Length: 231
Length: 90
Image (tube, rainbow over all chains, first blue to last red):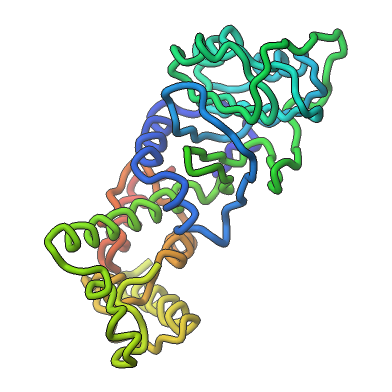
């Protein structure tokens, strides 16, 4: 199963199920569950709306401080996907604002993520769509008449390779990518880990000490060869 | 896949995983209803690998819309999950 070839809208029930599962775990547990599979997207992305978790197949594109490729990408991105805009120019001029993001929301996109500048932060706050950017600039980027022939495109940014259809997950802890064919298994693995952590928390709330629950004391004294609870 | 074949394959995977962390576990020590975390044959970093392996054994995808995480604490839960997936082709 791959979302890469079809560039098709994500089915609403699948989108809802994945959003709910991801919201309950977050990037930290996804990274724990699949440290060997994920790619870390190392960018200082900040949320601009109350929606702080974003997840979906990626629709990446690159621009050069030019709005036209961004508008092309917005028009082409399927519902349920995350539009990722990478600006080659830093500091960036404003590439997305309230109108752009409202359009993305009404088209059913899962989010807008910009390695570059957003603007209209006051108005953006009222939009339910997850919107993240690395910069803010009230000066709008220009719109040329130079049509891009590479929307979407595979791009290299923040130490990660972003290809169309690879899944992006992000929250206040950070951003990472997951191969499309492993999304379900990794999400469930993350939830399994969350259930395990909830059991640990219940033991701590019941008054047990962390060094007791994990077996740390026994391990340090050489009584046992390993911890009972370890990442 | 027959239940006994599934259990044998998954136990072999778990024994190898545990060995990679310096832990020696006999396959027969992994009961079908045992919690795999309590047995310490999986940890956080091997859970996703286990589920991908289980998907490969079944030749089908685990559907994120269909299962609760507790399902995957035990061999029996995983086997049932795979049969459910077989009954509902993706």
